[in-house]
Amino acid sequence: MSSENSTLIKLNNAGFKQNDKWLVEGVSLTVEKGKIVTLIGPNGSGKSTTAKIALGIYKNIEGSVEKYTNKVGYVPQKISIDWTLPLRVYDFMLLTENIKDEAIDEALTLTGVIHLKNKNLGNLSGGEFQRVLIARAISKKPELLVLDEPVQGVDYTGEIALYELIKRISDTLNCGILLISHDLHTVMTATDHVVCLNGHVCCSGSPMDVAKNNEYKTLFGEQASQILSVYEHKHDHVHSDKGEIKKN
Amino acid sequence: MFDDFFIRALIAGLGIALVTGPLGCFVVWRRLSYFGDTLAHSALLGVTLAYSFELNIALSVFIISSLIALILIQLQKKTNLPGDALLGLLAHSSLAVGLVVIGFLTFIRFDIMGLLFGDILAVTTDDLLIIWTGGAVILLVLKLIWKPLFASTVNYELAEAEGLNPDRAKAIFTILMAAVIAISIKMVGLLLITGMLIIPAAMARNISNSPQKMVLFSIIGGLLSVLLGLFSSLEFNTSSGPSIIMASLILFILSLLNIKQSIKLKN
Image (cartoon, rainbow over all chains, first blue to last red; front, side, top):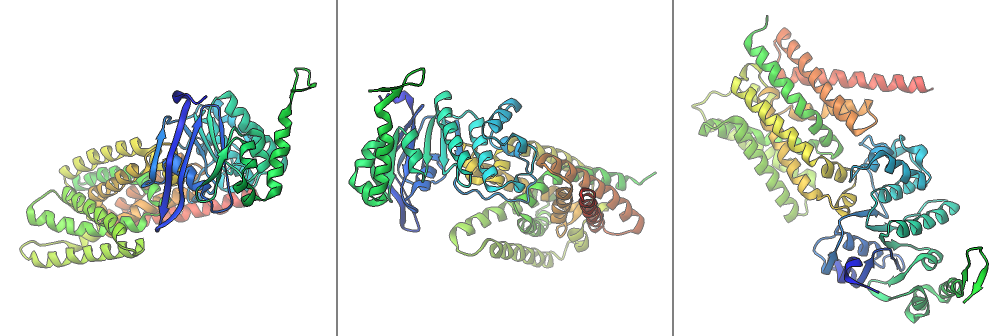
C-alpha cells in the first residue's frame, strides 16, 4: 500500500521545542499522493506546530522531515497581513507562483469568490478571505496541500461545500492533503488516516481504529467516539450507478 | 543653458529616484524606515573613512553600512533588547563616532552641511557612473528577489512553506539598502536619504490599489521630486537634499487631496 515513490512527506519522530517547552514531540506520519491525513486534538495539542514542522517553517526541530515535493499549497490557521500593502485578491493569488489567469479564475470560481477578484484583500470578510486562501492554495495545482482549519469563519453550507471541494481536489489532482480540523464529522467522512495529537501522538490509524481507541475516548469523550461509529456505518453499503443502495 | 554641475546633478538625482522608488516601497511595507535611518547615520563614518584612506565614498559607505546591518543582526540574536532600541543605539553611536573622527581629521576641511543635507555641486562624472551602474545592479537584484521578498512581506510563513527562501531574500535586501544609501549620500545627504525612500512611496500608497502601481507611482513621484527640488535648489540657492524632500512632501500632500476628492466622488 505504501510504496516509497508515492510518499510526499514523512515525519520521523519529529518535535519542536520553544523556550524549553515542547510544543509537540515524537510525531511520525506519512502523507501519500491522493490520501488525506487529518490531525485532530484539543487546543494546544500541537496540530499547527506539526503542520509547520512538516512545511519547514520551524527550523531546529528534533527528529527529521523527509520531503519529496516542492509543489506545496498552504492554508495557515492564522494569517496576519499588513494592510500597508495595497493588495487585491488577484495580486494575492500570484503571491508565491506565477499562475495563468484561467487557473486563477478557475480556483476562485471553485471556492465561490470569483466576484471578489479585483477587491482589496483588506476589505474581505473573514469567510471570504478564507475562501481566497483556499483558492490560492489549490490554484497552484500542488502535490501537497497543508490545510490548517481551512473553513474557519465560513458559513455552514459553505463549509460542507468546501470540504467536498477539498476531497474532490485530492482525487482529481491526486495530491496528498494534511488537514487540521476540529470538525469530527468531516474527519470521518473524508479522511484516510487520522492522527490524534495531545502534545504527542496519542493514537493514529483509520478513522474507525481511532474511534475505538481508549485514549481518544478520554480526550474527546464517549460522544465523539459515537460520531465516528455513526459515520463508519455508512460504509456498510455501497451505491450503485442508479443510486440504489446495495448492502455489502 | 544650465551649468555642467547642474546637468550632472539632474542626471544623478534622476538615477537615484529610479532606485529609491521601488526600494522605498519595501521600506514602507516592511516598516524599515528607522532601519534606513540607522544605515544612513552610519554612512557618516563611511565618509570619514573614505577621506582618511582616500577611498571612494560610495564604496566605503557601502562597506560601513553593510557592517552596521550585520552588527544589528548579531545584536538581535544575542540580546533581548527590542529592535528599535538597538537601531537607536547603532544609529546615534555610529553618527557620534563619525563626528568624533571628523574632529580628529583636522587636516581635511569637511563640508558638514554638505554631508548631512546633500550638495549638488559635489557630484562628479565619476559619481554619475557609480550611481547609474550601481543603480542598475540594485534594480536587477531587486527584480531577481522580488517574488520571495514580496511574498514574505505579505506573509513570512506562506513564503517559507511554499519554498521561496525568504531569509535569503531579506539578507540580500539589507545589502541593497546599504547600496542605495551609498550611491545617494552625496546628493541627498545622510540625514535625508530615508525621506527620499519613504515619502514618494508613502505618496504612491495613497493613490494606488496594487503593488505594481505603487512601485510605478513611487518612481514617478521620486523623479518629479528630484526635478522640482533641483530646480528650486538652483533658483533659491538652497541645499539639494532639503529641496528634493520638500518637493516630495508637496507631492505627498497633493496625493492626500486626491484621496479626499475620490471619497467625495464615491459619495
